[in-house]
Length: 244
Image (tube, rainbow, N blue to C red):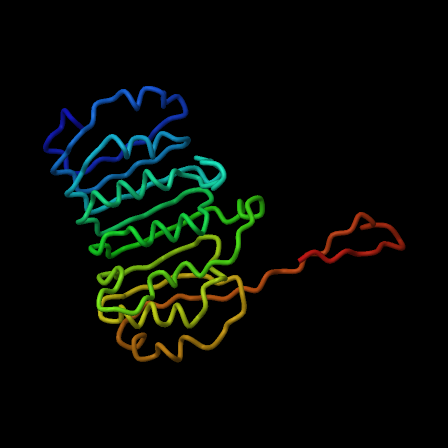
């Protein structure tokens, strides 16, 4: 980056052989023309690299880690270092698109990330590993409520595309989602989310006028499946155990 001052777009993949111990010794890079950045890899390398660069003109950011990877900062059990990402987000006031594909994100960390996103953001795609939550149980948090606050300033007022798949979606109420969409009715064009719970009320009906005017609304509800497991399977007098 330091040798390419006119660089506008960068895609960088960190291999498993990347020496993370050397990152802290690298010089800080201040790049004023870079507009899109795609970083992928594992371990603690990505958040460490974010601390070594400044890209104030950045408009598109995509971060990808392995789903099973753990950039664990005890006791939060996050798959990336939340402080590193938040510090980086505060330095990119022109950011329009954020795509994050990663392992487990705690609900507290995810809420903090939402609160630190720049007002310029238009596209938000988050895909986090949901299976890790069984090992790191958390208290229910309606994280979307942090973006539904009364006042003259609406968080993410320019948001056009909202697509998330994270743990804790089932804790978002239909009323919170409705208020989130209505507050951004003039800009929001696409909403995609899957609730692992039953429907509170028919939000499609409440948004019928917006949907008719072009809102791409893909919200689904799936109730948890009941699986049958039994150590007596196959035996003539077999019994069954229900596990939800």
